[in-house]
Image (cartoon, rainbow, N blue to C red; front, side, top):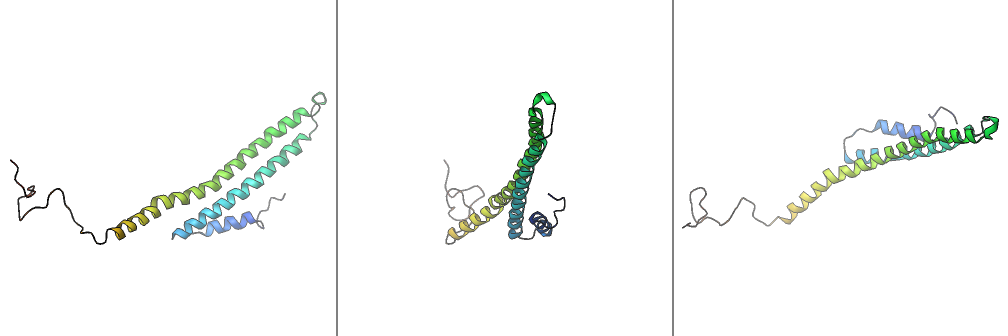
Length: 148
């Protein structure tokens, strides 16, 4: 495995993520898709590297009386840290998806519902009314009827 990632899909994804400017809802959608792809790619790579590191370290010749069991256990402990990183990369990818879902829930859905209510209320008379309709001009607080 080389340390140069410039020619990989991961480098292209990161470059695409850097180019995004938030101007429309489509930009948020693209950001979420790219972030998800980066998270999945990192998760896959780091999980595979964890297995490779654990396998390589388990072949180390430890003390003769442990028959290599000590090296296998230690190798798994070292690889477990990378597995934790792989899980974090997965969470990174999911955070983009959750961000876009939250945007839909808090910004797009209320707009759609408000437009729907506006269409449904088109023939209704708009205005402020409480209780009875006043008969003629009255005093403030007078609802058009007499209170005994």
